[in-house]
Image 1 (spheres, rainbow, N blue to C red):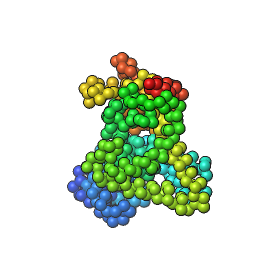
Image 2 (image 1 turned 90 degrees about the vertical axis):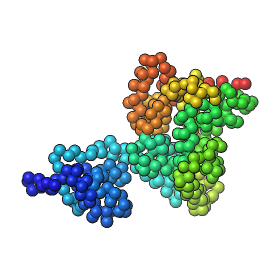
Image 3 (image 1 turned 120 degrees about the vertical axis):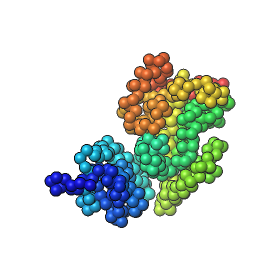
Image 4 (image 1 turned 135 degrees about the horizontal axis):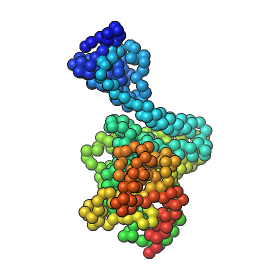
Amino acid sequence: MCRDATNGPRLYTREEVAQAGTLAIVGSQVFDVAAFSKAHPGGAMFPRLFGGHDATVAFATYHGRPWPAAVGARYAVGELAEGEKPVVIGKDYMELVGVVAALLLAALAVEARVVFGARTLALSTLLGVLYAWIGLNVMHDANHGAVSRHPAVNRALGLAQDWIGGSSVLWVHQHVVAHHVHTNHEALDPDIQGFPLFRLYQNSEWRPHHRLQHLYFYCAAALFGVKVAVLDLAQLARGEWGGVPLSPLARGYWRTSVAMKVVFYLRFFALPLALSATPWATLAQIFWCATVCGGYLAFFFMLSHNFDQVATYAPAEGLDGGEKEYLRAVLETTSNVGGSALCFANGGLNYQIEHHLFPRVHHSHYPRIAPAVQRFCEERGLPYFHFATIGDNVDSMTKYLAFLGRA
């Protein structure tokens, strides 16, 4: 180790920190991790495991804030030597932390007001929208591993799905394992198994009421939240989705989802009803909140893969049948709508093509990469479906549902 020529703080190389074993690095500071671990609010294990290592990224991702000056003043023993470049977290990450924290805090604040205060239609509506935004802007990216390189961060934020009434483990099982790999595959994609309520591909069985499916779609979509909050409990209890059992390797995640589902029922149903002087009115507003959230989500889910000219694949086709390369399979079954202004409102689902091609890229990057993807497709004569407005997309989906509704 060496001392600054001006008798300033002691300077350390990374090799010296590693050899010491009792020191760690955060930013440009070197601190006594053995002493710090005794006062660490989160326990001693994490800091001690970083002895001899750079903990800059770990501190930023687990705490969501810069290294406190007071901690540095108390436990710092020196700084990195000249030529040893510190790890830079960057202002963008901290800005993202602020966005996510504000969104979660807003939802929690509204939820607390709804549960413990006067429940109103306006507050129930707002809570439903906030739940949808948590699903689209937090949970969705996290459960795709797109928020952080650190699995623990993605896992923690992915549990937001369980907080708003879903199940993160069932969602990954249904969405990542099945839908993303087998988009619009008639046997393997659960997202187009709408029968008997809907007929979403030509080989599906037809019923007379399907003639009206392009009209009643919007009412049915509004029930999506109720389905998730109530009916999915049975599938979670069985440890399956659509008859396909969870991997036995996922039992630990399943137990967490079951526990959080119980907490959700207590928090979302039991507690508000127990505290309410008008239980039936409260129950109606609970279901209204679920309707707003579910309708918001289902509407954008449906737009992306149900439109005029979309492809669906029979069991002998698609990726499993060896007929399609992945890029073409995505481009033939997926569409985009709008632009960057819509990206926040639906968590980047309007850039569904880019999302399916690059699911581990955070949705905030899609507006920048979409033009390059579109040019790439056009240069190679590949399809690239993009609707300028939601209205154009809705019109195309309506025509498609009406077409499938005919015998």
